[in-house]
Image 1 (tube, helix red, strand yellow):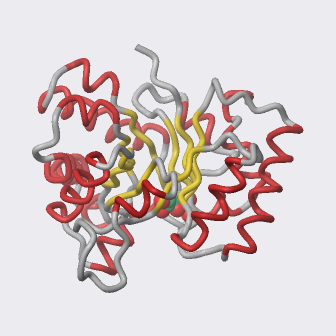
Image 2 (tube, rainbow, N blue to C red):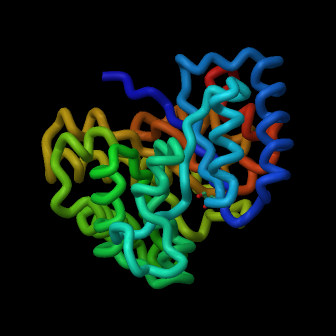
Image 3 (cartoon, rainbow, N blue to C red):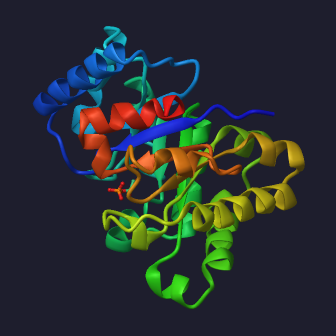
Length: 259
Ligand SMILES: O=C(CO)COP(=O)(O)O
């Protein structure tokens, strides 16, 4: 089976709703000018909650053939959870993807595999696609325990999900030491872990599920290194932080297949 590449931009806590219009417009013109073929790669923008309405309107207005994603969601249904945003609210806004378990949420907001698993289940129940993030820190990598550590996160975050649910979701392998540091994992390092993740999914579920689940690499992906990363057999896309804020860069990443 050939998996369709999926390139997702994670704007993180950048870009207000006014700036979002400018950024999306620039992306639109860059992609149109350079003839991006949406049949060849899926592209998603994961934007701050406050930008969702603006970016939805631009996508609906045919300014961009992108999917719309959020960067987090509550694991609870609507109710007394001050400051939280529910899956029902996101799906009502036409959100299709939700990043869950980003390493910044794990590090700064204490999210663990159980919480991330509950969020992924909620996202799926609402008919959206979770982008489930896993990946080790530098100390774990130095100790040579990165594969087992990451697979443990995979088992924890996918717990109790069905084969059908897992087949349709996205797993993002983001080694923490490569995020925002310019320190990109070598394509071989990224493949080692992404290949191990696919094998683990085959063991937890079955071959068909493993063949179908899309696995992204994230961590200092740029237009200059995306082609080598995408050449790896078990890497089906990229989750892009800094470079997704630069329209030319992100447009080039979305068009990686032209390199
Ligand atoms: O965390 C990331 C995407 O979610 C990666 O960020 P950078 O691409 O800025 O390294």
